[in-house]
Image (cartoon, rainbow, N blue to C red; front, side, top):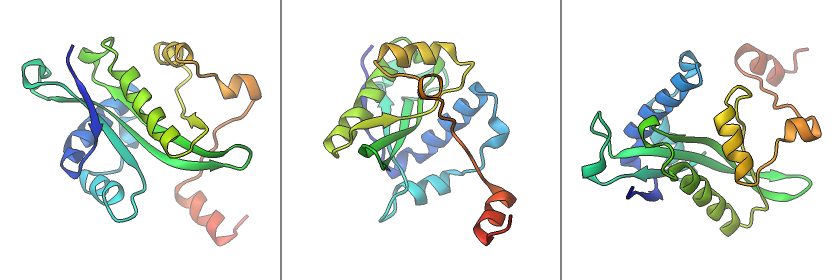
Length: 171
């Protein structure tokens, strides 16, 4: 199937927002999505963006059943490893179900990797749900490895009141 991978633009935020909701539904956490199209516009396309994005787009004659030509995306940002230096973190990798198995996910991940290498990054990091066997298998086939099972690291998270208390020094 013919498709292109390109940098996301401000005009893509509506479709990115739609696909974020689709991804959250797939991951069974749609109630967790709090960001809006406006948040994406401000956070990704301001003078100092918090994230970058790429889009998988098909020609009009291959559009989805719902009429979409933007059928996949990845959001990523740069981080730093105190051991290995520059790194790129892939926050999301999503392809609409009817377009999976056509190498779009691989092309999106490859592009994030290319952009990371061009920026001097030495590693690509991301998370995947433990029940998502097809994605785990896909990532392993790409040469990735499971840090949790191999090194025992766990991804930690703090938000809401706990974050406020932490910021205030409350214990």
